[in-house]
Length: 263
Image (cartoon, rainbow, N blue to C red; front, side, top):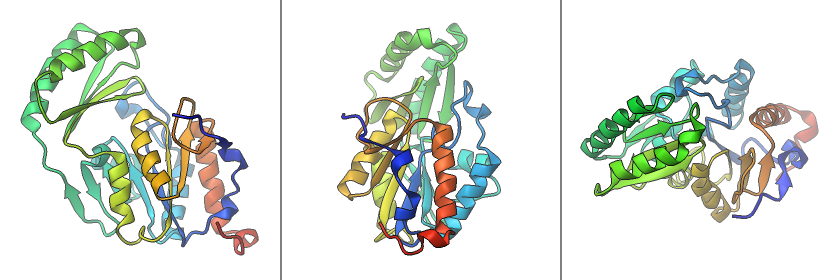
């Protein structure tokens, strides 16, 4: 994948119009700083306020697209309730608040989870997280165990059809079904209030690349947060920098200076 070509800092928010853009945002590493324990993350109140402003300004055309469960996003952003594609699109709440969850084989995931729990107990500092339709083996506190984690996950999944392994930042996920973030963005774009708008997606991890490719097919705007090779066209140097840009975007939608500029 090519490196993104332009800095987000050079992209003027005034080139976007609130009634013409559909905003899709990853969560961990994009809105929330990465934490050693997935339950320890938080979103700054200022960013929550910016999300609420953007959701209102765009007429509801803002969604979170994440590997997290929808219930987790609701908890971290409370009292704000947004459209969300959770578990890489296995569960989705649309702009009307309606849920659509894919059916998956939880029994196979339970087998993998049991094996990885044994591995985690034998390797302190690793953590197995269970979610509906998926699970994740985290090793942020034990980065030197990356290879051992990789081997353990592949052994646990071996012979079990319908399960897919996703490699992320200090985490390896096992997901049932074929849903991904690109498909989640495509589904939102077929529905109000997203339909007919210019899509913008921001994410930080390898699991966001499916969404970047979907955005490219729609001639939209893709933003990679942080380093690493990517299909995204724009890059924000850090989570802090991206959150600051989101605030500028919300400000621009309220600014007289921007009212006559159209992307």
